[in-house]
Length: 152
Length: 152
Length: 152
Image (cartoon, rainbow over the protein chains, first blue to last red):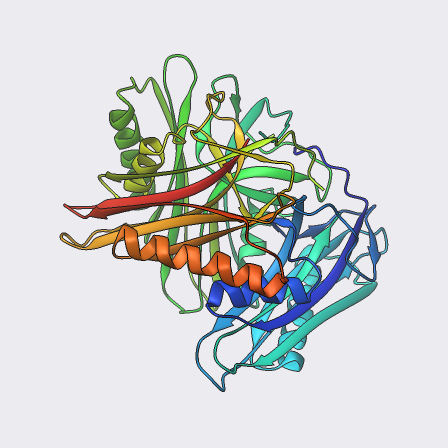
């Protein structure tokens, strides 16, 4: 196991245009409030004791932070891109985090929600609470979207 | 370096059907006994002092765990999907972990084994011991397979 | 946040042929001096206090190390593959790391540099210093290239 001091998590999302797709992704992370962090990607469990909060924390720039995220970038002007993450929790706090992509926020959020519901059915767990955060963006020249569940 | 308390590793594999490809992946992780963990993906070395054990450990749900894995998902009914991981070790315990994909377990395992042998030739190391774990699955509606080397 | 003892970083790059694309990637990591480490991939910030050094450190084999990297592999004989990473830093030391791909080292390095410049414009930060490391390779049978920023 990786030692960590994770006690909280939050959902966040952002969108941006950029000069390249990597810059658009970077801009979307900035818009989501997590662009100056070093993100370490994980799959996709909410530990039981972790508290879900409403906003990204103030962390030192360059801090190494565990995160579940979904991102999309596109260089096709006019294309609509959307992503979402959803967190479902059982009565004891254990949870599953699921990512989704789509063309609209509503579509991506619905898909993320459905994946969480399926994950709970697969585990025979009661789904007590679900939260979902999505974002959509119409590409002007080169755009990106990101939705993330940050552990901190 | 990341501080860690890794002293053991194990190979495991699983397969599942799911409502989406992400859920099939999630189900394959559950079948492999590692579905309720937060996996942090790494490339692909076995530290010399790490002991290889036979089964996934009992870890706290949501624990952040370092892992090498290979996965495949498919929504094409009838398709055969397979993955494998192989670990080779030198006389002093140093090792290399390699992933492979294929259509059958035998094929994926043979490819993972061949990659480990090539990695040892490349390092001019004697390959004292090799272990390999693979899995195959015929997709019913939407399926996934995963083979992993978990560090704990 | 992940606890870590990161105080230094370095840029490095390597190229190799291999029996498979995964082995070529493994060989490229060896050529870059980081092939016997367990790499944990991160996006893409240079913490302000981290010192940039000139070469990969001597770390224990199998150490888990945080890294930003760009890689390419190809099995098409004659194809030219190149990657680069660039690090830009503001006057206070905060920095951004960007990856790029291309066909030549010069092209990949120019693109990585441009992405760093864009990331600084997006943050309204002064770009005081920039370093870039790239590599190119003409594929014989099966080749790989990697450029990395290693945190240690």
